[in-house]
Length: 275
Image 1 (cartoon, rainbow, N blue to C red):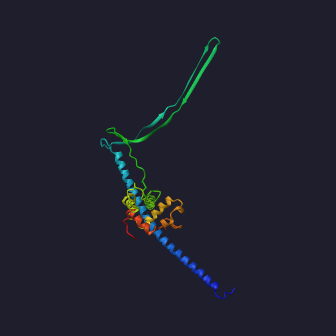
Image 2: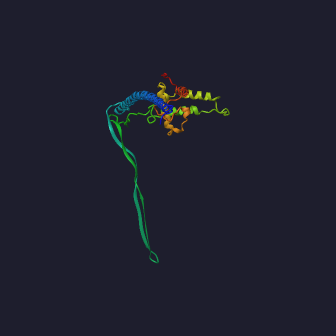
Image 3: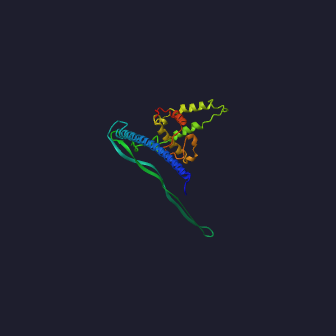
């Protein structure tokens, strides 16, 4: 059909312009997301390397300490020590069977009686062995010091290797959930502001936040998101406005509001620098 007034062309041009702007918006959002993801992954890569190195170093020190304990008699100081001597450990409970029988007869009518009976018991319990150290000079015996593998618990950005992200989220939630009742005469505080300031004073020096105090903001947001998602398994329950949560957010894209950031900085005693 002939487009006499160019109405169709205008509609098509308007539609294409809208699509172009939408694609530009998505492209910009993608650029921001990928840049942020790169920064977070880079930070985590270095953090993981340092964290693993620290765990291995602590494990090495533990092994060396165990070796000193196992190689030197704590009683006489001799190093003439025999390892892996074993001895019994545990309890054993007995078992067996018993029976009794008999008979007698007699009497005016020749009555006979037969009696029998029995019982049963069993053995249970444990009997094990374990290694010890024995000094060949003074015969002192002491337990072998054993060391488990390196401990990788305490990772500040993992809900599987620590409870730090969840601890962070719970403190933020407690801060915002705090209520002040002016009729509660047992409350020593006189306002919500006093209650919150006391809360900040208590947690701003907590060792649980040591790993966060000099982190960049985007890593605090990463940790907070991990804590939120750990608490709210289904994120539809979260207060989206308060936490600035968007439906398509994930651990790389989530950002808190500037107002919440000011609160979080106080709670963790943040000493980092703004980027």
